[in-house]
Amino acid sequence: MGILYKRLSRLPNYIKRFGPFDGFRLLFQVERILLKTSETLRKYRFHGHPGPVYLRETISDHSIFWQCIVRRQYDMHRFHQSDRLARVYREQVQRGISPLIIDCGGNIGLATLDLATLFPEATIYVIEPDEANLEILKLNTSYFGKRVVPLKGGIWNESGILRIINPEAGSSAFRVSTTTDHSDGALQAYTINDICRLAGVEFPFIVKIDIEGAQANLFKNNTRWVQNTHLIMLELDDWLMPWRGTSRPFFSCISQYPFDYLISGETIFCFRDYEVRNGAQTF
Image (cartoon, one colour):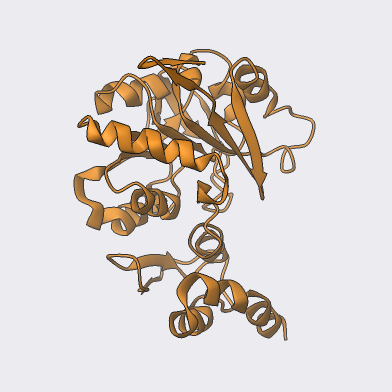
C-alpha cells in the first residue's frame, strides 16, 4: 500500500516533467521498494537528456533523482530574478567567456547534470568527497565532456586536508572536517578561489552548495567571491543540526551585499542585484 500511495501522489510530477509516456514509465521504474545500501547500478533514459542517468538501487540515489530531476530543485527559472541572470549569462558567452559554475557537494551528479543542461556554454567544476559517489557522478556527466570537471575533495574556507567524519552515514549525508593525517582517506580541501584559478577565471557565475553543514566554515573568511557571484544556491541544514548555527556565517557574510533571497524547499536562492550604467557594473 505504501509504494502504491507514493506512486499515485508523485504521478502528477512525473507527467508534468516528462510527459504522459515517459512519466508513467519512469514512475514505475524509479519509485520502487529500495535498499539503504546497494552496489547495483541501473540506467534510465528520458527525453531531453543526451545520455542515461545511472542510479544505485538505494533510497538515497532515487531521492536525489526525485529532487533534482523530477522536481528540478535547482531550476532557478521559476523566479523573476532569473531574467537578469540569463542576460548576464548571454553577455558573457557573447564575449567569448565560458561562465563558471561550481557545484559544491556533487553527490552522483544530478544537480550538475541539470545545471549543465540549463547553461550549455558554462564550465562546471563539481566537488565530491566520496569515491563511490564520484564514480557515478562521472558516468552521469560523461556526455558533457570537458565541460564538467569532477574533483575528489571538499569545499572549505582554506586550502588543506579534509577527512570524512561520518563514513557510516548514507551516501548523501557525508560530512568532512580538517585533519593533519595524510594517510588513506585524506581529501583535498578546495577554496572557491582555488576552483576559480583552476578554471582560469576571477569569479564564479553560479555557486551551488549542499555540503552538510560545512558552510559554517566556508563563509568564515576568504569570501570576496560572494560579492561577485551572480547566484548562490545553498541548502540550509539547521533542521538537520539544530542549534549548531551552521547557517549563521553564511547569513552574516551575504547580508553585507545586495542580493534578493528566495526559498524553495530546503534551498535558498541568492540572486545578486546590480545595475549597468554607462557600461560600468555597479551595486
